[in-house]
Length: 228
Image (cartoon, rainbow, N blue to C red; front, top):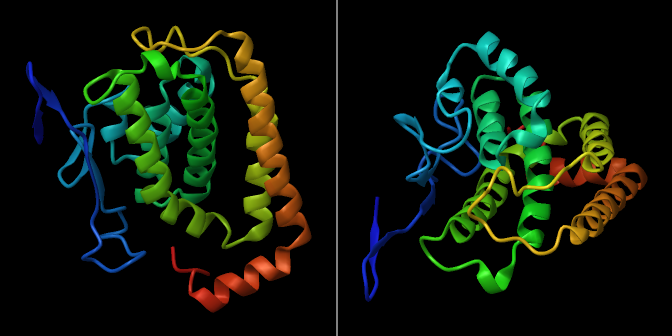
């Protein structure tokens, strides 16, 4: 773990790296070559964040499927990092349809989380809010290449996931009980942010619905189709 020196002490600095030496858009042994130290490392597989960090280490797909059900039934009490990592682990083990759904779910919840942060009290490097924001942005950017790359190999399946995630946004509850040290803005803003996210997804759904052929053709032309 890299350390950054401040006037008073040393604070952990998350290192986000996407290993590109295996070829852009390619994974090593079917796994996404990504790490976000000190929280996640693909080799050796290390997870040090989240409610289900031990369970997510499993390479037994049946155990991860059981964990999926457990998390689904306890979604509003599950931290967002666990959802992102679940998507990565499912992708690594070949359950890519489920991986795309969980990535989209994590992304929707992370967006609302970040918009609900009290920016005046968020803090800087070393604060939980700051580190989580950086972690979520890293997952969106780097893991998103794989998830979105795979998710629209079948446009109809990708569209179905968008619709499913949009329908579930309304059930998102307050993050205060999960992130007790993080400062959020007034809870009245939660419904506003949920509506905003629903609208974003609705726009995506409309675009995909009206441009299925175009999306497929663009993916073929840029080499994305069936690459992931």
